[in-house]
Image 1 (tube, one colour):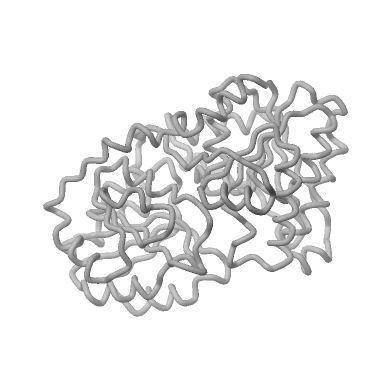
Image 2 (cartoon, one colour):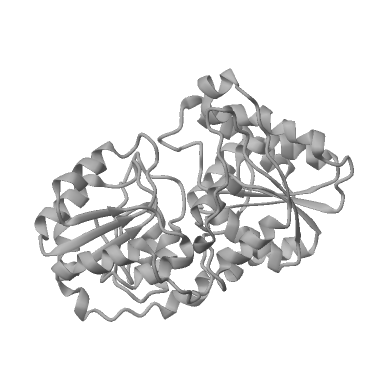
Length: 389
């Protein structure tokens, strides 16, 4: 079956950053299930957010999952909906994508009966609905719950809500990455969807020579007795007050944060970084090198805000952390409670400090969960649905 891939984090993001976000992991699963990637439809852009693809092949080392996904993208046809300018981009931000995606239709066949669509963006609902009328099957995978994103405008959250309603009505298979989102869809739209939590692929060893972040961490940690690390996006969800307290309470520990900043969301966190010499912030690292980086840390952190700045998602990094056997500290966000016997769940500086101090003596055993968090296990219902389409 031919696959039409409509990702929220589009091809520009993946090829420029080399980060295997959920949609690209799902792409790998669909390819392994026998789908043939025929077409990629990227998000609409104007001159205000135009991007060029500057693909650095060092971000996709030989033998990595990322290199396999890149090869599939390179062999597919690509549609880039573009407009010179749209006033709705100014007044509604991402909400303008809903109609702009329809610009892709001119390049699409009227008979798509041999195609399946995968999308995880509610803003592509009008396009998906039209492709459904042309015979395509539709897979909708809800990445978080954009109706609750704290950094979205009201117009964006409203557009996301409309998109969820429409996509859930037409989807041949639908899933979401957290129980909260599953429950929300049932309550608001009366639709039951599968819970498909985030997962991992088995770690692969790659040559990480010359990766600047790895060299910087290796050098910086020499001055400290313990090194705690976080790999992920920086934004409102980071609990900057907790990080500030930890850094001040543990001057002999190094706290490393690796990842991209979300625009306009990092002022408070950056102030904490500037005020504490034992906090080091580094640029995002391609995910092919993730496990090499995680091996440098004594403790792995998920210091997310609890409450209004939470996203209704499932923390992928927790499952990646489980693959390392390292001690893990996480704030009490809603999605992690089931792992309370395996990791520290607290937003108390004293609790985190005790873990840091004893980290070298802790031997973790995550075998009770490690086999269940691989992508093929998580996505078994999706893969079964594909085989029946």
